Image 1: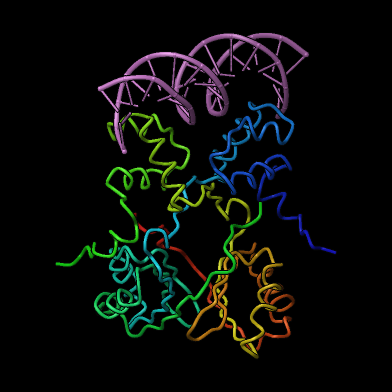
Image 2 (image 1 turned 60 degrees about the horizontal axis):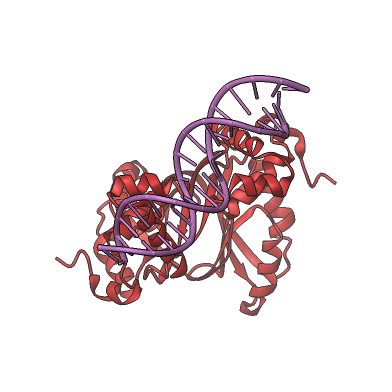
Amino acid sequence: MNQQNTQENELLRQRIDNLDKQILVALQQDARVAYAELAKRFAVSPATIHVRVEKLKATGVICGTQVMLDPRALGYQVCCFIGINLKAAGDYPAVLAQLEALPEVTEAYYTTGHYSIFIKIRCRNIDDLHRLLVDQIQAIKQIQSTETLLSLSQPIGRQIQP
Amino acid sequence: MNQQNTQENELLRQRIDNLDKQILVALQQDARVAYAELAKRFAVSPATIHVRVEKLKATGVICGTQVMLDPRALGYQVCCFIGINLKAAGDYPAVLAQLEALPEVTEAYYTTGHYSIFIKIRCRNIDDLHRLLVDQIQAIKQIQSTETLLSLSQPIGRQIQP
DNA sequence: GATGAAAAAATTTGCGG
DNA sequence: CCGCAAATTTTTTCATC
């Protein structure tokens, strides 16, 4: 039963104990929860929560907090992925710069496999997607071809478990 | 110049004014920033910030807050996407349930295009990815084939702009 | 709808175990 | 390293504009 291969864990994540894990899980669900509330929940003092969170920030485990915005509430109905193939591998930085200028591109990955670059798109509707694809993305000279995966739903969305 | 096609916006996102946008941008960068600090920054009273945030929560624009954990700091070095094709379209719910049980699956999308299901994976190293793929994912009976896109880097990662 | 002031609550610090 | 308790800061309320 090596369900938990804790060998390398001990090396990499230096001393993240149960309390740290509990705090991280709680903050993943609600980053603005009061430390006093967590203190009650985990039967320690508020100061301890504070010290632990500061340490997790200092070690880089916590790399920020953010509000989650609902794309649909803001009028963004369409989510899709686009796999991009370049004419030449060296064109990567130039293409990336052009993609970064498009606010609809929310994520970009440099990948091995079927595509050179893989991006995630959020836009208002299919018409906007059409325009974006034809006028903005396929217009980028160094792009050879694209392949679009339209997302119909996202049944799973979560962070890694601490 | 229809850079900003504000026509439907007015309908969908009911009255999100400039202050709301500024607040959202600030909270995207740091969800724990003090309302008093935002009040100073935007030259309004703390009470106004409070009222606006509550309204944005109530209308569903803000759907939560969370700490961002750095996968690498937790020992998760590998990020990849896997495109999955099913033997039969109706197998979708069964496969999804099995994917949900794997903590390494952080995102799943039901897609049109080359794949039926598209998932994002976070795991510790290539060996773990290998085991996950062979022992856990390809072992799912309803899966016909998989295609792996290994992410070498993620140069863009952001939310939509309010 | 926004504000200012007041009340309530939380964060943060430093001393002592 | 933890906890207590005080000092500071913040959140939150509410009457008023």
